[in-house]
Length: 218
Image (cartoon, rainbow, N blue to C red; front, side):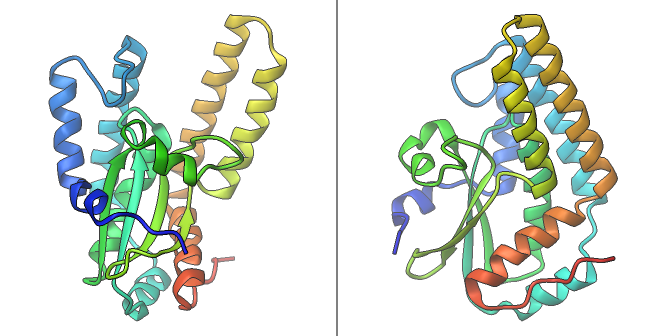
């Protein structure tokens, strides 16, 4: 059984602290991680706007509320993230809304690039994809399960684009394909209105703790 050290959990940020850190770094012309390029700063600024919007607009599905209320195991949802990551900006505000619906659950955030050992234990198809949620028993810190980095449909889009990018030699062509992926993913998230994040994440939680996941709406 994998465990996360108590020291790591104690040092992990709340969502509020993560938002504050992001704002402070942007004020200095920086973001999280080691790349403070103009592009990374721009992505981070976009993500702040996305998180602000989701903080205001996210509504939990009734089935999600029911499952969360029936989940009586104290848990910590330890999430690897970076402020420049577009998927993280779409996912983390929703995780916070779900954590708020159960007093036994805490959301805690750690930065991927500051914890490579943890990230490398929870790779996705061999990659350091984020956000990655590690579901922990709050007392023992045993790893109960994981979820991430994104809903299945977006993951399929990303994997298809990755194959395209590997086949492209031209730098500008790669840039264009990446921009197409980013635009398509953000359009998908907007249309989905957090439904898939709630359903798929809670399916992972349910599998980990033995509580039925919400049924997908037809």
